[in-house]
Length: 131
Length: 131
Image: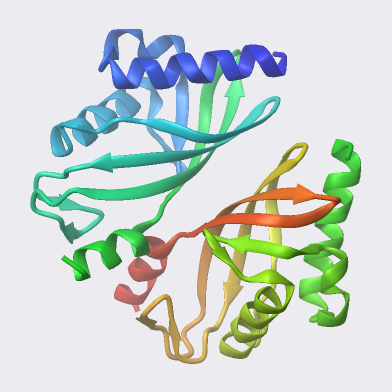
């Protein structure tokens, strides 16, 4: 698993999410994938993404910074989107928000097997306050 | 700036914070350091750290995961600590909390010149709710 294989696979994964190509998700996500310590598996991971997109129809993943050291990737993602109702227990209610996610991935067999994600909730709260 | 130079410098930086050795901070932090988009400089960066430690006397930085690709480092830090009063606008008031920070650093001349940090506020909120 070289660094260039890893980053290519990761960028293909992000493109897969942005195309809502859920049937291809198994090319990028391991059957035993964990997300923030919770064993979701491929099916649970897909359900999580489908729920995200249902809650936020204009969700789009943009890689701002990508750091690769096999078998790990760290990525800073940028989101400019419009959650329909609640997001992270905040009443966003159709307001446009902009926030980052700092996320780490561990790969196994070129697939994501573990994710440690943190979303910048404080920045979203500040945007809702100033609305 | 090799990967091993970078990770050694970063681990020395973390040790410096845990020793509260502020006079050595200039060995690790650039004069023009930015933190989450804000130009703090070395003096502002030191002030930020001194305030963190004043608010959280038992603050200790523990590296859980370290990913290096010069000139960048990504680090997942773990904190088990006891903020005296407010933290991230939350009334912690001496409760012991545990949370992670996913943080990216850009280095210049082996010094930290830019930081993109996100703290897991949602996890802290959940701990305060269940208290």
